[in-house]
Length: 81
Image (cartoon, rainbow, N blue to C red):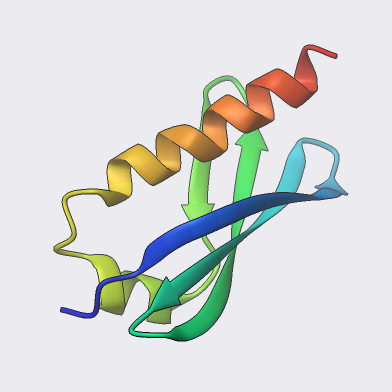
């Protein structure tokens, strides 16, 4: 399993009526990469990754739920402004 270490989360803006894009930058063995995530503000706010490659790399990483929660917390903080 490749270990991705999150470095930063950037809000990229609204992509639809209830859809928002976030980009997370990672480091892994000295290499840098980034993946985008979509937060949907429907009845239940949810976050999903936009790339199957992210899922392939992290599907067994027990830290990824914490990353998803961090994206949701950032989104909630931005929404409350």
